[in-house]
Length: 88
Image 1 (spheres, rainbow, N blue to C red):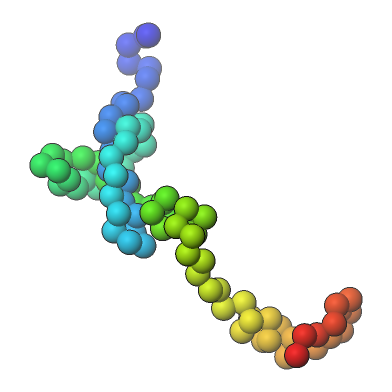
Image 2 (cartoon, rainbow, N blue to C red):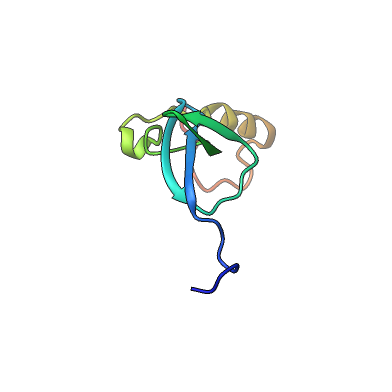
């Protein structure tokens, strides 16, 4: 391999912000934050979803407030141009 052309491949801590789960992996990602983890200092990458919080892996599905948005839309626009029946 040529010297000086490859990014720095190093250990990085990824932190799931939804449940504070942290794991170490190797990456070339650039980050400004660091964290003390298992007695050493690592670069920190904050993520929103990991295998510890994703519904597919956990089997827990979060209920999304789609009904409120749908009701708001139907109040605003009614059923004009709608090809589906309104469920009551």
